Length: 414
Image (cartoon, one colour):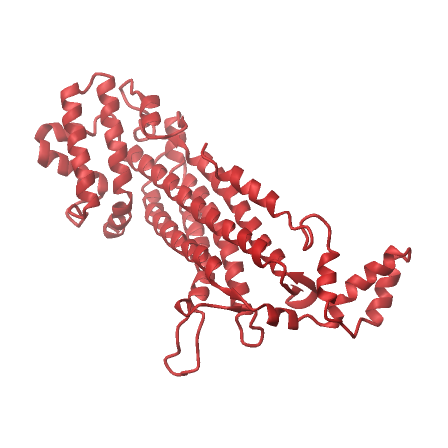
């Protein structure tokens, strides 16, 4: 169990060091550390940050966790002064603030990836969007549609995901450092100054609320990753279906496929399938964490388990979403195959609406057209059909500018 903790703490260590540096400066501001001692500690911590970045400081079984590793290194370098760094805090609020900083960092990374993928889909919708393709419901051919509608739909779904990310960022943007083990400490800490230095928008004031948020806020943050992976899974399913030889609407570059160990003719969409599977791992992690958090108020050791689960799930999710963003730009469409899949019965809805606009009750024309659906389609009927879809957001009125404007508003620096 300790080994699993160290794996997560390797990822959290840079954030732990940033928070420790801010804590030291805060102690100096209230006079419990001299300016000289503060400078010496900050210089040492800066050096340790470089050691970590350079791979020269690695957590191993000598340390219980990243927190004890930092204190051990400072004690070795600075002697008694290094052992003073923990004054005014507990490992409880130390891990809370590291997790909070980590969550903010990774949520911002997710937002960047989502924005890149959404921008790609909007650009492709503008450039390739006029190509006609079947629109499906229940996996059955329904009405003519366009590549633009498909791509714009993917883009707007990702913009919704950015809304979720921004909501999660607001929730995790409270600084818990200075709450101790859940009941405060006997020092008039400069909590607001430390929070500002660490880039938090507010202080999480109540010590017990801070402690009870351990795992809960990570669970909320992980929900944003889960929402994004839900859309990634749907996109992966689309590519899986549309790349089948029987459909062949899209072509995947070779770097996203693998061969068979037995069948020389095979090119398997393994990367797409792994992207499709990523959602399940994230959803499972959330269930794991939520089950663990069935606890009374105050710190319980159970919550230690949520740390590794959270970090592992977030890193895997970011990797999967990065793949999605690249795939969004790299796959090709076969416009001819898409057009060829549109057949005469798919114009039945157009025919029914045309008759209804002449004054015949829609339910009557529905029965008439259902009994005798179109059997002949001319070469330009698909284009005429999608041009007639003028409801805002539909094929003839995609409103790419509105989706793009919302994307820009959600990703502009706050």
